Image (cartoon, rainbow, N blue to C red; front, side):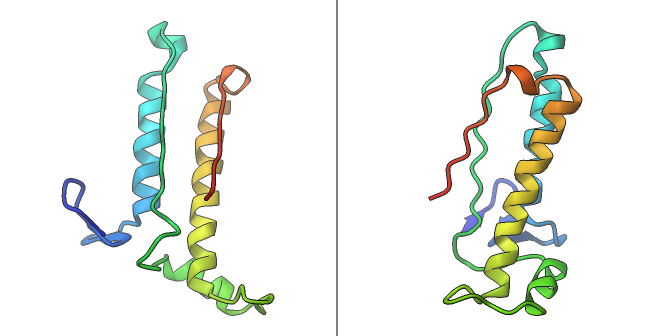
Length: 114
């Protein structure tokens, strides 16, 4: 997986930035810039994360949290779990900015995980 336009190869760029964090930050910037309370127009944002697709790569600090935990059944990959947590953090950050800007009551968020 290579994203040359934004400088990522895999889930990290050369500065160590995680792709899910980068995409989330761009989404938050988009929401702020296109706030209907400022622009007078609605917006559409489609945020599609590449986590949890291969390569299985995650932030070390999150991996360390899951290495300490006992797996359940076939769910015992700390890196995979850390990738899922990164997506969870992303969704929370997007929801938080919608609430901060007073947009959460009039915004439809569809979360689809396949």
